Structures are given as structure tokens and as C-alpha cells.
Image (cartoon, rainbow, N blue to C red):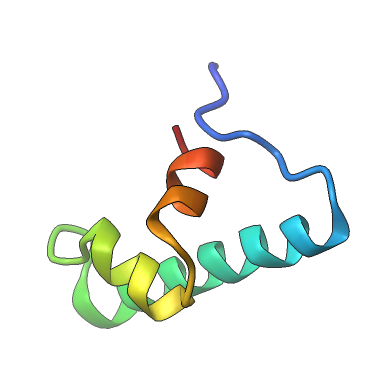
Length: 57
């Protein structure tokens, strides 16, 4: 199976990656998978859009 993300290489990057995943899991549980947007995940994770796109291309 192809990997659709770029693993972080720094400790800070790993924390950011984990924060995004945990935020997404929480939003999926609250709002459902189909109604949760990438923009909502980005906003609630408090990251830049470019960071998300860099990690999940």
C-alpha cells in the first residue's frame, strides 16, 4: 500500500503531525467523516495550510 503522507523528521514536526491526527480523529467522532473538511482540521489543529499539504500530499 502506498504511503500518502510524508513522515516528519524532527521532534517538532512529529508533535505537529500527531496533533493533526488527534484533531482529525476527534472531529471525525464529533462531526462524522463526511462532514469534516480539511480546512476544519487545519483550523482546529492551529497549523498553516502549507504545513498540512507538506505532510499529506
